[in-house]
Image 1 (cartoon, rainbow over the protein chains, first blue to last red):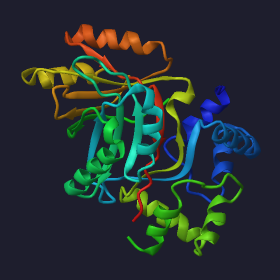
Image 2: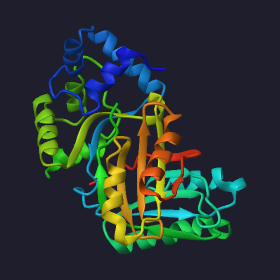
Image 3: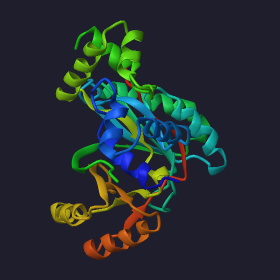
Length: 156
Length: 147
């Protein structure tokens, strides 16, 4: 688990690294730590998966990926882990999760967010997932967002 | 966007090194100078092509609670309910979607057990049922678009 020093490092880096030749030294100086301690803790958080990755985080929309859809699928629970991994590997899928059904009104248990540059690309992607799931697909829908009502990002 | 910009986006969505001079190390691999790399990242951030340059944290592993929730909001009340939901600081993202379940939001709390009480509070405030859909398994996360 993370401690208060980790927490301070997270707070100092969650909006980005300093764009200076020695960014970890700059963070260390700001937090009154040694650079070795900052780098050691970041490496540990990376190893433990607390940091998913370090690098450039592009704005999908600015790169031309202006269309996205939340595809939701009803697949048998006993096969969902196998199917989720297959769907998750598709290059246009950004997130793929198993979530609970709420019967009878919400029968879907597999969620996959798809991204494309055109609506027809999205339609093809949905078709591709449908073919991959084959007989295991017991129904699906795609929910398109019409408006962002709030977006603050996750901050500790 | 120039070749350096494309190279940054295509090669640098992960694996940025943790060392004394990480920009210099990456720049050498990309066959550019450290200054060029830093200036191009700065420009991509200013232009909004990059939203961030740095670590991407895994929210749940920080010890907090996280869930996706949905509501069926009567169209006539949509603006009012949006305000009622958004006022909670635990609501990180909120999207209107075309479906009977027409409002979808992400809740992030400091501790996992706070999720239930926030959901109850939102239900009390709006008078609507909240469908809680916490993830039970994650199969993939990390769309890395190329340009």
